[in-house]
Length: 113
Length: 115
Image (cartoon, rainbow over all chains, first blue to last red; front, side):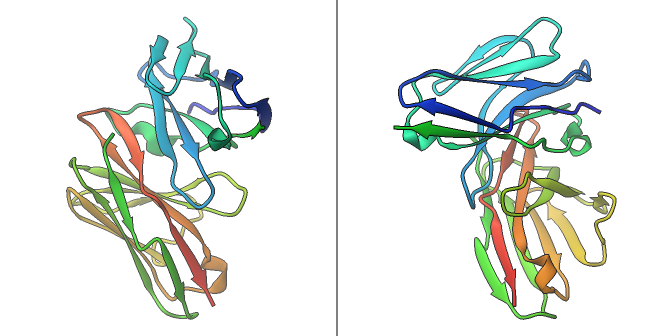
């Protein structure tokens, strides 16, 4: 069962690039890596998902090394509205394997003016 | 991305009453949905996995008679908190698995306050 480990908190100034790393040493062959953003009193919002190498979309990039034991979410030029908790989730999507994975602590990102 | 609608967003009830929370996948079919609860400043805790047409699978420590889950259609799962007590006050969140898009999407959550 893949377990994730993230830094509990990070601070960044507006306009900076932020990289949040997640460790998942026990990731299984069929597991995908997904990152979510959560604001207070809201459900998690999908940010990006990948299996290996690099994935980029309009809001973030996800870097996954060859051994897949970690992943890094990169947020370019953060703004105050990016202040939130970020979770990485590892699981086997096609078989609904997310039920086998619990959420980690998440990383509380505080963007400073 | 796909949309998961959760209703109501907030509910206040008296102790001893039952509360039903609905979770709908609006533009995809979800054979599998998940229910979580979240206490302030804590992470999400998985309560149960809901599979369409079959009984839900509950995580250890979650009372199945307390938290009734029904997944009667491919787009709707409900969580009923029976005989709610103040300690059941929490933020409840559902998620639905889009097997076509291969992504997990979350509802907006329901804040339950039991007086």
